Length: 119
Image (cartoon, rainbow, N blue to C red):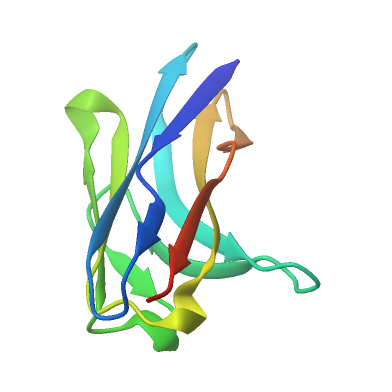
């Protein structure tokens, strides 16, 4: 079993910056894609950004140029640097990791971190 612990989040003013982190621990075999998703009440969870084990990245159009995803494989940690935050970025942010073992892929989610962008 893999556990994910998220940190960061909170209240930030429009135009401000914030960094989220998500660390995996436990019986990790081989982490592949790591990513961040977000959800607001009444809406489906949506992809924010993903990063592959080799460092390839993918971003939602709404965050391109403002958010950066990166990872530290030695620490089993994925980060989301959020700059120039807007009110529409307010959401609960969840990290997700894929762990590959014996030909099977296991998906794990973090507990969620509230990010509120407001003046």
